[in-house]
Length: 210
Image (cartoon, rainbow, N blue to C red):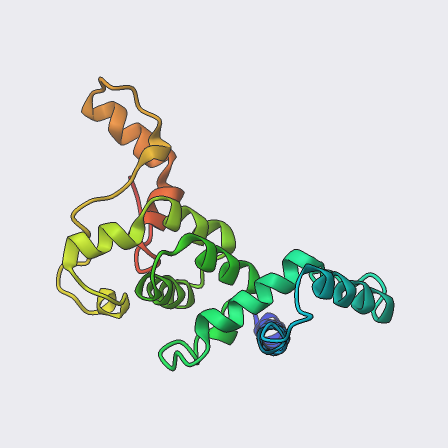
């Protein structure tokens, strides 16, 4: 790479960094807005006239004011209310809320059974920068339960520093092996599915060679 290419590469880095910062800021404002709408609805739910009719009227009003806006139908508004009520007063997750996408928030709220599990997946998704697909796979595979059984730790931060970074169990259903297989079959299937296997291990790992 010559000097001119180095200069261009620096410009590329500046553009990408600014774009990422802009995306994070937009996402932050979006999550804050959903939280405020959820708070409004939570407080209104204590009034006698609150109900499906109130929500439907509010949804119709928003659509008239902001033609084509998405996410503010009845289901979306109830989700915002749930979002606010789920995390209201929980100082442990306050700093995490705006670091996750709305899609990831919906996955965590619908797929977690306790405050501890929700916090676990929030911290994990932020640390690993999971897309919604990656987060959904980890949740579907019962990563929280397996992690708790493996190391009996509540939060994922110790993953960075513990001496043995491996869990006691890994889910490798993506290999699609038959009930009876040889070691070479396992190796070939594992290499073929290495991308998913590395996702199962975590982002601290990389595939160097077979």
